[in-house]
Picture 1: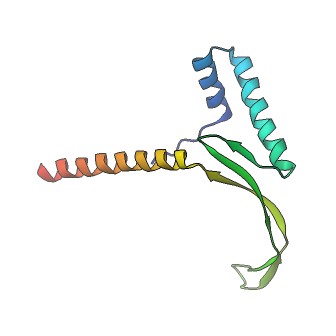
Picture 2: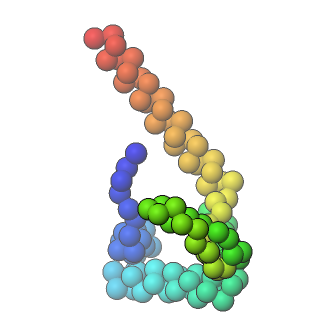
Length: 115
């Protein structure tokens, strides 16, 4: 698996290459989209990006947790958290990529065994 992280700069570069906006305009566009998503989620509303997924806000109730060092029970306060739910299209693409990697990997193992 790749340990590479897609950054804002990577997104801006992709917009620059594929759409042809200037690098500055591409960076501003990426920032505007991310800011809109963030502000909408912060208001407690959901954001759905078709064929990608949904960003939702969930309320978590108070619960009892444990301090792993001492084992002492500690109350965890109620809070709101942002969660991401991938679309079926994204899930299918991930599964397809995984299947291709697994097939390629097993093919390499078979070649090594034959040597």
